[in-house]
Length: 204
Image 1 (tube, helix red, strand yellow):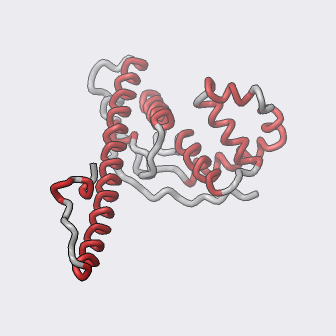
Image 2 (spheres, helix red, strand yellow):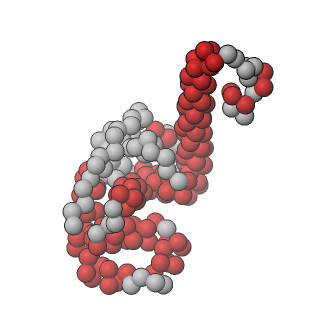
Image 3 (cartoon, rainbow, N blue to C red):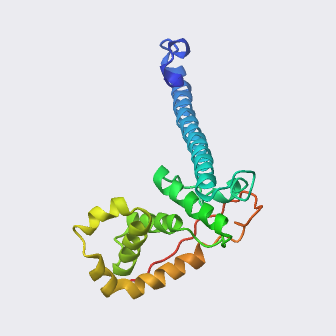
């Protein structure tokens, strides 16, 4: 229920000369309702991500045999995406798993994850159709991280043909995204930091 829907806040009919200010007030209250809903959505999204990150850390500890407060246990601050743009649960969990596996292996956590690359490609596809190289990279990354989902696409698309025709361009795009989306702050003991997601043109 919004502020305006609460009967105790509804005013009786007023003379015409008083209605204009009240209409302006009503419009302001509607705007406040929308703002509060937006804030609540942001808070809910952040809390969801915290819960998913905790679950993925616990799963990684089991997967890699970490029984105490080791590197994986202390990796929470590494798991935040570089962008404040909301991520679906499946994509965010994949991002966490890739980073946690890097931590367990002692590998560099700064380069972009496949999830970060997919997020940029997905956003680009909302603006204009992806060219052949970018589409091939999107399918390649999706098949790498979500094989159960992208196997269905393989029944329709000939991935080998995509790779044959556009594979070298896809390699170039992946190298570009790795470089542009690298997070210098994302190292052991890092504090959480958000940076603006770069606008990365994908040439035709």
